[in-house]
Length: 375
Image (cartoon, rainbow, N blue to C red; front, top):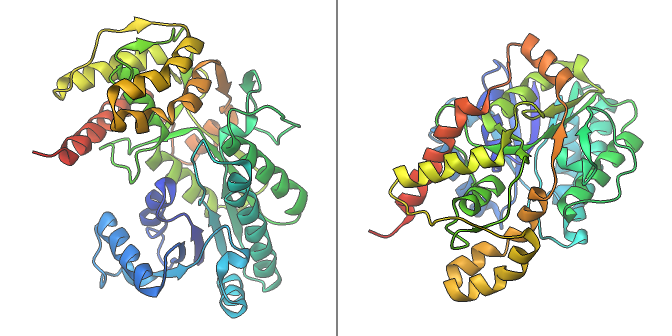
């Protein structure tokens, strides 16, 4: 089994690598963006340290780093290297993407649509070589954009309104999959907001969820907060997402499926409950939280530049990413996962409850932030 993986240095990919190597006889080719061969080796050494392996360990010897760029044609590889990689890969897992919410649409397309077409071309070549067993593509529940209600586990209709360019580009990438991937054994995975490991909270990058938690604590806005109402936030721990994708990759019969890797409407956490948990965790870790003052969301959006100017450069930088997050708070949207839960539970992967992982996720983040502060 030779697995080609993109996004090994990202949130989901970094959790996938150790799990994929649990399968005896499996080897990995991992695409890593780097300036040159020396930088590639440095980045690989950093990742091995994150996984707890030495360069001469048995696991490291089963990983082949490949210098490339997902947004470049053929991943920036020479024709010889690209063909050799395609001809030798039996399984393809595409996790790489930029999750910035404020990209231009062209930037978002370059990191979502172009890589998807390259992956499909690689899969077709692998199939012609008689090697291909499975293709797993990581999308997002955000492809449903601003569609109201509970989103089903099926292919997209024509969605036209999105919260940001990231969602719009990922939706276009999914349409490419179904329009151009006929005959390929493809499974599409739609995670919701991915957080740290369910047992110890560990995660390689602190992304949107953690910025939202800083906001909910009130520390970024001097306690000024919009009404949260009944809105829920769908989160999912990274280790469960990785386990689901690894299982799917090993089971070709999942081809054609769409998995909603999320908590679902009933188990997604109410924002009011998340805010209480965040503020308690902040206090337990010695961080002060201000008294909360409720303000209309639209007024808060207008006040963000003023708050940044008063608070200084650090807070101003943090607040730049807040408007896209506030857009999510304005809507109560759910993602159905009934069939996904059933199939994964049968595979021995029951959906974890938010209560089982929220505390270690918040604790790991706060411990990491404390270590970064100067003594």
